[in-house]
Length: 167
Image 1 (cartoon, rainbow, N blue to C red):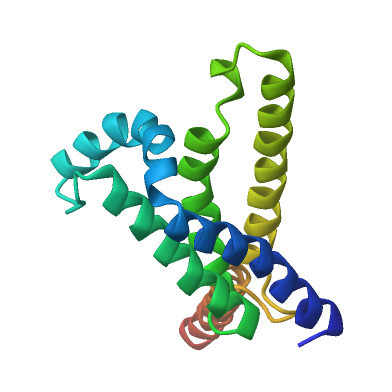
Image 2: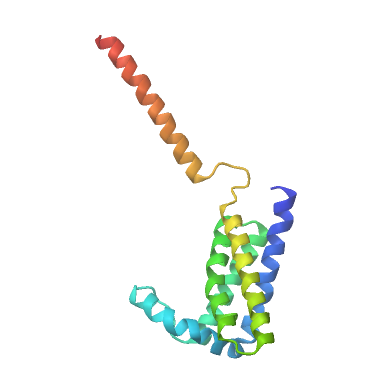
């Protein structure tokens, strides 16, 4: 692992750990904000067959738990691509519910929420980059393209060999 990954992964995880532990400690305070999103999303997810609690406080705690687990995995280098993708996905509802600047009427509050919303978008982008980081090793897409190229080359060679024997 490169030094930049050794430093960057725990730094990315630190902000998530702080926010998630804050969500666990202040679940009741965050439940009202989260309800704006959970009231719309949970019924659709449940209808799709995915079991989720309907209680908003439980969802806030569940999201925080997922973030803590994924952040610890990312910080320690355990399944870093998966953990970064999980964090990115969990930040979407967190950002929409927690930083709804469009719902603010006071200019100072609107500006503060806009800043936090854009900051979270930046974090989501960083986690998406981390989710795609193969640590210098070929990724699945490269390996698939390489296997297809090798198969085409082998097929052409077999074709030529067969034509030479028949012809």
